[in-house]
Every structure is written in C-alpha cells, then in structure tokens.
Length: 245
Image 1 (spheres, one colour):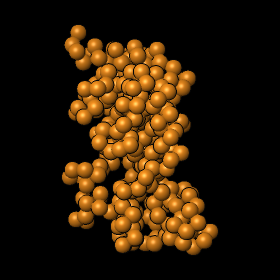
Image 2 (cartoon, helix red, strand yellow; image 1 turned 180 degrees about the vertical axis):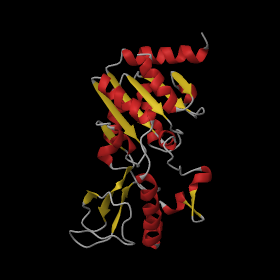
Image 3 (tube, one colour; image 1 turned 90 degrees about the horizontal axis):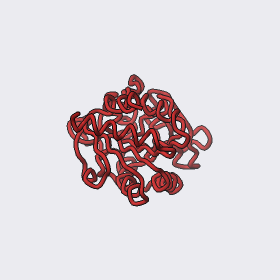
C-alpha cells in the first residue's frame, strides 16, 4: 500500500471518529469551479492588479472603477457552479453532529452547494452594504448600476466584502476562532496559509489538540506543523475521503 493511500485511509479513520469538525477553505476550492484567484496570471483585470482595486482607498478614489470590477466578477460567478469539493463538504456536514465551515471565499459557492453551517470570513460578493446607514442586504443582480445607491437612504452602496487593509468583523472572526479552538479535527482545504488572520486558524486548532488535515495542490508554510497533508485537487480527494468512510 503506497503512502498516499495510507494517508487517505488515516484521514477517513479520523473523520469517522470525529464529532466536532471545523473546515477552513480558501481560493483553491473555488479555483476548481473556474473562479479566478487574486494571485498569479488571474490577478489582472483591464491592466489593473485585483489586489489594487479591492481596497477602501481605490473605492474612495474611483468607486465607478471598483464597481465595474465587481460587476465583472458577479457576471463571471453567476455562470459558475459548485464543484465536487463543495458537494463533498455538504455530504460531510450531513454525517457529523457538529460541523462548521469557515471560508475565505466570497463567491457564495458553498452556500449554493448546500452548506448550512457557514462562516464567511471575508463577506459575500452577492451582499451589498450602504456607506451611509450601513444596512446590509442581498442583491443577486448580475450587473448593478455604475454607482448603486441604498433604497433606504440613497447613499452609495459598496460590496459587502473585506478589502485589503480592512479588519474582519470582530464577531465573525471570534466565531471562526472559537470553531478552530473547540474542534476535534480540522480540514484545511485549498488555502495558501498566507492571508491572516485565517492562516492562523489551523495553528489555533492544533494548539488545542485537534488533528489537522491539509488538502492542497502544494505544501504550504504550515504543512510541516500539521498532522496529515494530502496533496492534490480537493475535488478529487474529498470525495475519496467520503468513499472510504
């Protein structure tokens, strides 16, 4: 039996005996559905780096440009579907008495797949927030006006996402930290382990005695600290974990 098969069997055993599972997902899960990532060749839009547009400074300087970028992203995401990794996590949630999925992704694909116990660390692209009255609402229009306004107060709307340079909402971060510190097993899937504070959640879980399984295309800076590393596509490996249950 080769090492990869042994690792998958070990992960299956751990999941089968777990009552409290926390899952952390990142851009790698969404990429398998065709969602562009912020980094690498997919990080450019009209010659701009996405990381330069997804900031409060960019929105203050040119909200039309930022909304054009987010309307493009909405149009792209509207045609994409959850992949086998999303679907496997829904099945995993149904099997376990205590399950929480913490995601860094804003694309709504986990929710669309059927995940119920979901913490969206960085917000959701289909939500908008008023810059005046701060009302948050869901808007699934694929293309919003150049400068969308609040129905209640008329002020400018912005995407309800956490931009670079902004802090996570304290209550949401606290929920994610608690989920990490109280789980028996954690699955860390498709994340680079670079973006904080999400990157530290696996270490939080490990420090409290949880078994941490990483599923990723390549090793991360945290791989050598964790209990088990499965290298490959989440859409292939996660269904295998359920088949071996």
